[in-house]
Length: 293
Image (cartoon, rainbow, N blue to C red):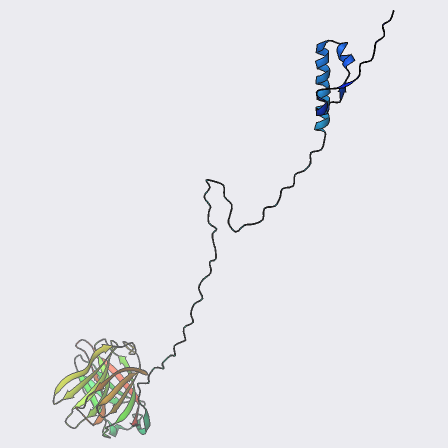
């Protein structure tokens, strides 16, 4: 006789709140306990697989607003930001200094007193000997010395000059370091005079000769304006008023002297050989001007 089995109502499983559903007690009572736990395990694995397939929401990070102070973790040393082009202070403009013009040491001159192209033999003392000569050439006068240690000069007959500005061109063709040539001025009847000379070594000087004694108001000084050796050419200039004297070579100022010893006289030219050489020099284009106050 068959027994009547009353159905057992379903009751919630202890894991129902974890998403596993309901378990039939009747099924559990009719099977061994091991099968009971295996059933629970299989149901749990199936539920886990389902949950693994569930989409995980994407987390969007919240932006951190920028701060003026750099963030650093504890224990870290903050490296300062390198400023590659630091601002510089604006420089103060300095007013441009006015350039003072070079003072013209060449005093003003007036009209021409006379010019000499060396075509009139009567105006110069000419002579010739075995060791030296003074001769006129093609608009020039030439002083030649063939032996060492000789002084040769030639004086112009007139006029007697007090204040004047004189220019002349000198062209040595044979000349050595210690040889000299140049202009004589304020030459008196007693043969007192001033002597403005250039050396073939490139120096200038001023000598004064009074009563047979020589001195040097301006001693020998080397100048870049004087070309050394020969052949060469130099333009000599002398400005004289009273005791004031200014000297120039090739347009360049050389020196000034105040000397009242000799007040007036005529002009002359000279050449002097050194102890070991001879010299030949020609002079041309002599022009003498008045001196303005």
